[in-house]
Length: 95
Image (tube, rainbow, N blue to C red; front, side, top):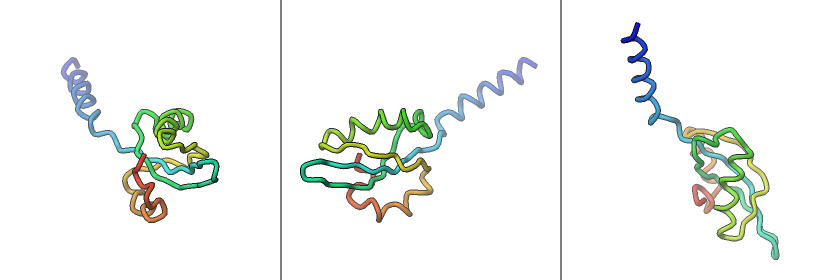
């Protein structure tokens, strides 16, 4: 029984680095003059699927260049990158 528990703990520890990559797509704006953009960004796995936590991670990144986060559109994995690349243009993985 003890070997089984140790094996489970070791397997769980080895699986941690294999966490999935997390991305989100968002809308942001600048004022005076009004400018809008759609973008795609990678975020930490810890905030994936949590809009409030993801917002807290994204807002400072965007603010560096004077952008304000309007809305987080959704979360996705690496498999969703290609279909969003053209739409995001210059804002694909920029922030």
